[in-house]
Structure formats: structure tokens, C-alpha cells
Length: 601
Image 1 (tube, rainbow, N blue to C red):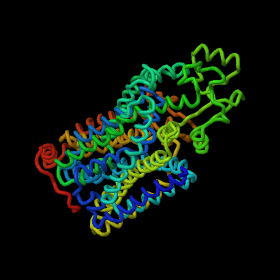
Image 2 (image 1 turned 90 degrees about the horizontal axis):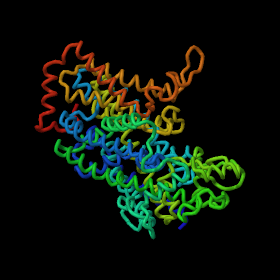
Image 3 (image 1 turned 60 degrees about the vertical axis):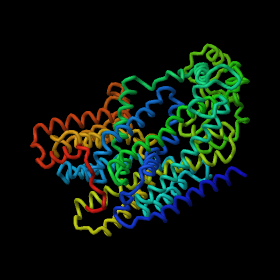
Image 4 (image 1 turned 180 degrees about the vertical axis):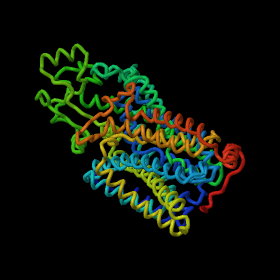
């Protein structure tokens, strides 16, 4: 069957499934809308949590980043997975016992302050909106490539699908839809990996294939990849580091504590009936997450090797990498390259006019390459490959069957939509429950709050779609900034609220504002444009990565330290929390029963 038609059928079938589930599980109360009635089974919740957490960044971008960066790309694996463990061990059970199903609601009660809750809402909205830009961009990329529509139309379609199952189903609809989306995305991720691992190593399990030997040789896959990339002038794949060790360290920490502070994932632990069930669902979620995260390094390495083999025939034959006849003629490029060129994520520039694709590091120190450059006038690397296409194009590069390619398209959409729905619910609950019900309109009825939640959800979808169509420069291309914002604002206030009974409202408010403020300042100073007295300044604070070489995406760690430090100092010079608040903190840390989630406020 034609690839385009097959893709329409597979992706269309998944959309029908998602909408059907939403109709079946539509929310009829605020408890259903916010926490799915609090009766979700731990295994089901674990699967839904995995889908909620594994966004387009995990499915589409992570393996591509590892593929481009090599060993250093492991910081995403360590940061995101380690962060989930932090959340499961240090936050989720205690927050579940506290009984408040949103982060601002916890802040309001723990810090006995509506002002603190309002600041928490600002932090949550800033993080969620930044994060959702990447999800809508992922939807646009996937739709435009596989459904043959424009990027803009892809985002509009994505908005429509999310509207159907998120607005009407609320958390109940989203939970069961995310279970289906997990099944789709994990199948789409692992099946191509199994095929490719078997092709290259004869081992069908990708995790083992990564450490295996190439078919018909005694050379390991990683040794072959190291040889190929170093011969082409790139850094050795198994030892490459992105920037300084300090930056890698703080980047990893930022991803970890940012992950632990994600409000749309935290809220999932309130959909189960007990604290014990929350712990159990956290364990199941880690199992489901591990299936993808242990597969990603194999996908990255194998895709990188196949890509080089496609462009340079000497990769697998062992010939001269830099012989002119070994590089691919542009006119002979495979169909998958032509399809991806249309998206703009794969670009070729014939710098020397020979009609062939040169793909090697511009700064190569390989003597053969340098001699060829001098003799033939080669002008350096001519191929630009965006990291976001590595997973999506992987089955096409490996010449897998059309049904596998169509399945990957459905998986990419499922990953983006599942996280987008979770983020939209977090935004909606912050507006309808934490701002309207708790601060502005305390007499709002349950029916009115449910309607306000749905209206807020619909409005959030429109805003998310607009930002996906017009992404601001400071956030385009990465969701790491969202993790930095969560790390610098939300994670510290939760940790101190649980483990420091002396922390008061003044410290919490000052900490959140300072942590968020300094992180946003650093991000905008490097990635944004400031206007001062009518003059435009770019890179306001001394050039790129001026703070000890730390990149903006990694600065959340510094913001978190500022948050903790500010909160501690302010709390020392202001009155202690009331006695009942301190006893409440002690009680939350004591492993006894839990408040039931009833939807009552």
C-alpha cells in the first residue's frame, strides 16, 4: 500500500481511538476533571504517567540529540530519568498524603498565603507555556512530514484533537487516552529499533545490539561508529562531551530537579486512591519509561551509522572516506532525503559545485580530508541534519516497511499530544481551581468551576497553538528551558514545604520570585533581545554563556540555588510559621493514611 495512504489510515485510526476514549470517559464532576475521580489503578496510572512525561522531546528529539552529541547526550537520559526518581521518592507520596491535587493548592495551604499561591501559579504558567511550545512544534513537524500538510495545518489539527479529548474528558479522559498513546508510542519506538538492531548486529534486542558486533565482522558497533565519525573529523562518539564538564554537570542537575518539579506529572499521583497506590504507580511508571529510555542510546548510535552509510558508501565497505566517488551524488539521493528536504529539517548546499554531498566536520584534522580539500576545492560540510528527524526518519533510512514508517508517525504525534494534554490540564486547573475558586471567586459552585476549567482549557489550547505557530526566540527548539524554569521556581518551594517546617510564606515567596527572575533574566539576556533607551542590545550580560560557561538551558540549577538561599535567609529574619502549620508538615512526613480525593474544596 502507498506510504501516504497507509500513514493516513494508521494516524487516523489512533485519532478515532483517542476521541472514542474521551467520549466514553467524559468528566462529569470536578473530581473527574482534575484527578479522574481518584480511582485509577496503579498500573494504569503508571502507564498514563509514562505517556504524560515522555513528551515529543523524549520521543522525537532525545535520540537525535544523543546521536549528534555522542556520549555527552547521555545527560538527557540521566537528568530526565534521575528527576523522575527524585519526584517518586521525595515529592509524590508526601504531596499525595497532603491531599491537595495542584501545586498552587499545596503552596496556598502549606504557606498559609494566597499571595504565595498566586506566585506559584505564575511559575506554573511560565513553565507550562514554555514547555508546550515544544509539543506543538513537534506536532507540526510530524504532521507536515507524514500527512503532507503544512506545519501550520498540522498544528491546527493537533489543537483540534486535543480539544476533543481534553476539554470534554478532563483528567479522566486524558488518563485513559494516555494509556492508549503510551501503547502507540512505545510500539512506534521499539519496533523500528528491533528491526535495525537485527539488520546491523543480528541481535533483535536493541539494548544488547548496541554492545554487539557488526554482522559478518568481529568489530563492535560502537567501535565501528567511533572509527567512522573520527575519520570524518567529528569527535569520538563514545567520549564526546558538550561543552565543559561544569556545564554538563549543572545541565544534568537542572533536568533532574526540573523534572521533579513538573506540575502536570505531579498531579498524576492524585488520580490513585491511596498513598501506597501512588508509590506503586510511580514504580510502574519507571518501568514503562525505562523501556523507551534504555532503547534510545541504541536508536541514536544505529541511526548515526546508517546516516553516514547513506551519504558515504565507504562507511560499510571500509574504503577511503574522502575519495570523491565515495560521496553520494545529490541526484541519486534516496527518496527519504527528498521527502525530508521539503520540511527544511534536512538541507544540502553544494559549496564546491560538484553535485555530490560532502558530509564531514568542517574543522576536520584528518590529513586525507585536508589534502582533498586543498586539491579539489572542497568547501567543507554540505549537509545539515536537524536532530529532530533522527527518530522519525530512522525507519526510512534503514529501508523498513511502510507500515513501520506509518507507525512511527503515529507514535510521534501520540508523544506530543499526550504531554500537551497533561500540560493543558495543569494550566486549566491553575486558572479555574487555584485562581478563580481559591482566590477570586470562593463561592463558585462545582458546576461553575467545572465550566470554568473547560473554558480555561479551551483558551489554553488556543494560546498553545498560537505559540506553536509563532514560537518566541528564547524557547524555540528546546524544552530544556522549561525544565530550568521548573527547577528554579517550583522544585525548591515543594522540597522546603515538605522537609523544612521552619520555612515560612515570606521565604517561599521571595525564593520563587528570585529563582524564577534570575533564570528568565539569564535566558533572555542570551537568547532574547532587550531594548534600552531605544537602542537594541543582544547578549546583555557579557556574551554567550558568560557565567562560567553555563548555557541558558542549564541555568536552572543556579536559579534553584538562588531560590533555596533566598528563602532560607528571608525565613531567618521573618516570623516562623504558625504552630499548626509546623505540625502539619510533621504529620505529612509521618507514614500514616492519606486524605481521600473527593473533589471537595
